[in-house]
Image (tube, rainbow, N blue to C red; front, side, top):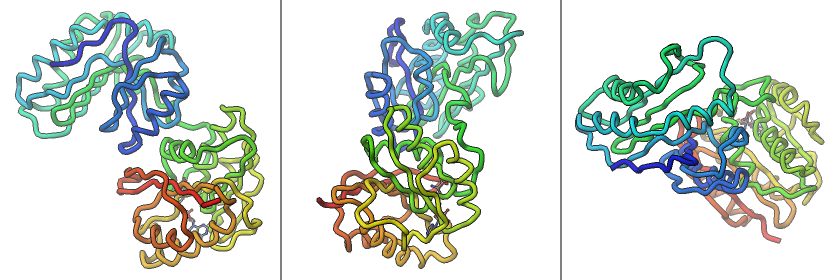
Length: 361
Ligand SMILES: C[S@@+](CC[C@H](N)C(=O)[O-])C[C@H]1O[C@@H](n2cnc3c(N)ncnc32)[C@H](O)[C@@H]1O
């Protein structure tokens, strides 16, 4: 049975990178005072007292939707199509459109709408059949003058089917939510900003702290750190560097408005920074395929962590995202940091682990 949603105010859901549901749920709870109902499978379902444009300021989520209905009881059989039609018909779409228009004023000219259906798993019906059932459930919802559109339509209704789970909603966010205004320059190994945002939340900075990304690439982590600190009104000091000149130029461009204390071309194994001077290290070192030979990883992590332990203050924290944990664990064993948290995620299509560490006092 699909879960019925109270007509007022509707529930919401956010899509997040799998593995980061807990971090996103924490942001939703703290930053938009959401009451989280469920956080798994790449989805965080929640409620707020009054959905408004503040929802689009969330940093760790990919998209935010008004929840029309959700189920984890699909049968895989064609009878699901009747359920999709039935559940979709019962949604108070007028109210959804009102909330959507309050956040995105109606465009000049004729509005358009787009129905998006995603389906994974083996079902006894096709994706087009599910989309047709969704369209039938929506009959009469959009005025006749509204034309069906494609990407960048005024209003989008999404149906995502994953095995026996399905969720349907009206998308409140658009491309601008994930797009960051600082991102002038991109590099192939650059992190998704939402993943970098999760890392800096886990770093847990306080006013006056110093934060370093010693292998900063295009500077995504430091930009997210600076934006989070600005939002919280926290003055923090940012240090970054990379061995690669091209990466450094991209970082200089992306970080120019954040005025880093230091942005240098350096080898992260030998940093021009005083011992015990940095509060937080947040970094995504190169993964296997990103290095000339994967055997370089062990020695690189070993020497880098040794150096990072030197510059970290006692009680300082490191948040690291790597593809292979064993070489990182070997490297950390030599400095004795204590493990705080660990999240399995996917980065650029590869399995990766985000881990949080603390240097003892
Ligand atoms: C996965 S990328 C970082 C991407 C970055 N987080 C971003 O979003 O753009 C790893 C970076 O480590 C840098 N790197 C590799 N070895 C290094 C070293 N010994 N010292 C400093 N940087 C290094 C690479 O040049 C590359 O830019």
